[in-house]
Image (tube, rainbow, N blue to C red; front, side, top):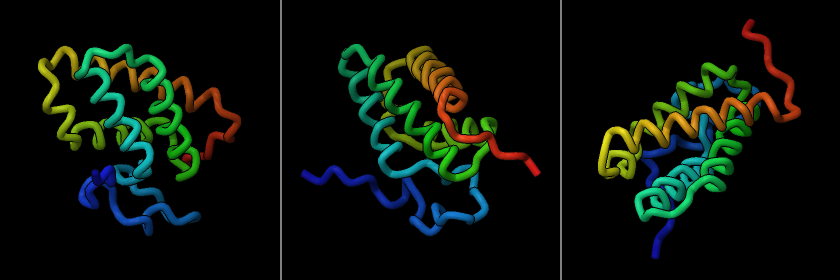
Length: 123
């Protein structure tokens, strides 16, 4: 069984090069996208997803720090990637999608500020 993330979901690794200007909509790693997909699958299957949401949010924050993104840029990446996932569109209702995204956003913001990475200057 192939568990790889399709190449159209996450851009080539060149956009993750250290020192490269961050591209807001392409700064989430394949591992982070996979964590988001696991969260969605568990949610859809009725599992309690708190630990998966915390893990995915931490990965989003780590990617943001690694790529030098400000919090608002991180949220743009998260929302853009979320909207691109087929699993999101497969959830039964808009309320479920919005609730899960809101939870992930809140956790990602908390994780962003709780990590020991310095916040980069916007200039």
